[in-house]
Amino acid sequence: MIQFKNHLQVFLFGLVLLSMLGQLAQAEEMDQTQTQTQTHFYAEDIKEAMHLHLREVLDQEGLFHIQDDITDESLTLTFSQIHDPVRQIGDDIYFACTDFNISDQSEKIYDIDFWLRENQGQLKVFRTKIHKEPRKSLLYGWYKHPRYTFVNDQIQYLYDD
Image (cartoon, rainbow, N blue to C red):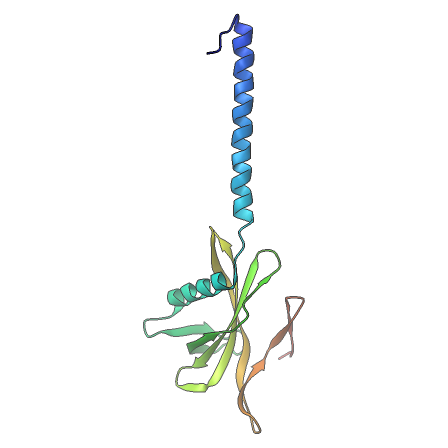
């Protein structure tokens, strides 16, 4: 047990103790901040987040509804697959490319891109965009016609219209 000879020693001991407690609290806060900002997600995490997102947005019949921002058409689509690879873009953005087909015309396939980022420890979709639309060629039949490409992970539109 510590014995103090005067009030000054008690006061100084209290200051040292408070300083130590403050440093401890600060170190714990830094650990929590580092843990939050150092979360890294892997391919299986991205795919799991995508499957959770799809469960949330598909209607009761399992159909996906999206407004085409180019044609302004309301589309009703059926989920087909998540492409490999899914990936990380930059420090905190994750990306998944998927296929959806027109519900009653399975040969007509839309390629839809999803961007995800961490939200409270989980990956959440924050952007959805139609990447490729179904077009028909005399030689090849139905194919996915791209609207944009990526240059250094940034969208670059291929056509003006």
